[in-house]
Length: 68
Image (cartoon, rainbow, N blue to C red; front, side):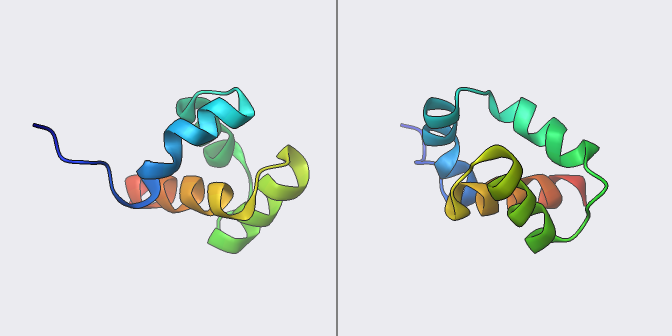
């Protein structure tokens, strides 16, 4: 049996379903942004792309951790 997905990635299926874009596309947008701080990116995703706070925060946290 596989382990259940935990942490920010646990939001990914609902993000894709709700906003209609694959996670890779959201990560590309985050990486292309001139912003670099977590909360700046979260606010940008919320205002420019209409994401909810939890979804935006999960995407940013996962992307920034991946890029370290």
